[in-house]
Length: 230
Length: 231
Image 1 (cartoon, each protein chain N blue to C red):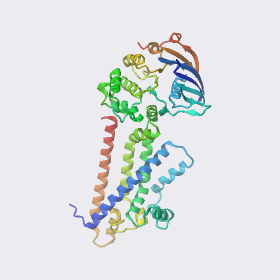
Image 2 (image 1 turned 45 degrees about the vertical axis):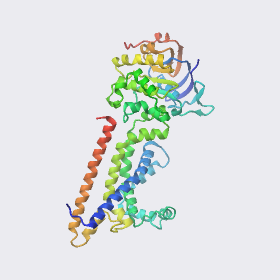
Image 3 (image 1 turned 60 degrees about the horizontal axis):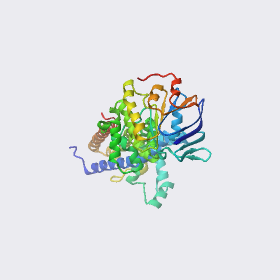
Image 4 (image 1 turned 120 degrees about the horizontal axis):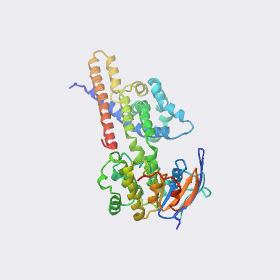
């Protein structure tokens, strides 16, 4: 079943981005070298960047359609986004960061959901700390939890391990795999590291200079040189 | 301890009230203008920036005169506010607060603008993906992160308001109990024989108030830093 369909064009400086792909459930990898336009594509899915032309649909909702003049603002898309640098709010505690999405949606607190996600990511001992007091790996786990607690229809992860050292990469990956298998939220996972994607991806979309070069299973990763992450 | 006379106490109480009201009323405008200057590009932005900074470079007497002709009873804005809201500025303490607010405004706007420019906009994007609309992003992310700048601006504006003399005396004169602030009272005492002692006492009070404002701003800024960064 198709969950996400993307067909977008945008001129970004000298890069002419023209990307078209469809994603089912599971983890779809957006794979390619730096500057291929991966982050721009996820920003367009999230609504943080507006395409020049094309359309984006999630489940049965049109999020963007240039012809029909539809452009759902980011806060109404219900798409969770885990950024490369975490982007936790520095003035809020971990608990308040996690709770932010629920407060914005006006939902009543759901203690069991909160506890389940805190347990899934092992962030219980961090709840009363400030983001500054967290390690890089802890920060990314909180960022994942914060996105999940908005009850997203889709989870975008943009190089979530890129800013981490090797040890922390090893620390995070099992959580993300657990997330893919247990939480049943479809994911779009951006990375330029084949080895990392081999462990998490179920589908691969390979971007090259703003175009989709190939689309298929994880065997696509074998063609690329893998810089191992261990 | 300073053995202040009731006239002197009145001037002190009035100065504080005027400075507090001036700062509190100027703050929302300061945030709005600081935000416009930091975030928006629009036609006439340079003009707005210039007007905001004008009280800093104009002779205060000129600012006071301009307030008199626009906000006086017969001035276009003053007459309108009087008719529709019963708000009178001329020769009232409210007029002194207006003059002080205008004089302090450039000092208020600048730190707020700098604080807003320093905010990592990507945090606001993150808040949007978490379901916050523009207003909530502003209230829960932008404003709290700009808080140190707002404190700095408010303290500078308050200090400026406490010391304002030229624009106030031009606009609302020097009426004991209504518009005679510490500065105006010091000036008045120095004009009469034997007023030196009273003037000196008020000078001491002015120094104490200025120091207290500085200490308070340091303390507030440190508290804000602890809230943000947990150290």
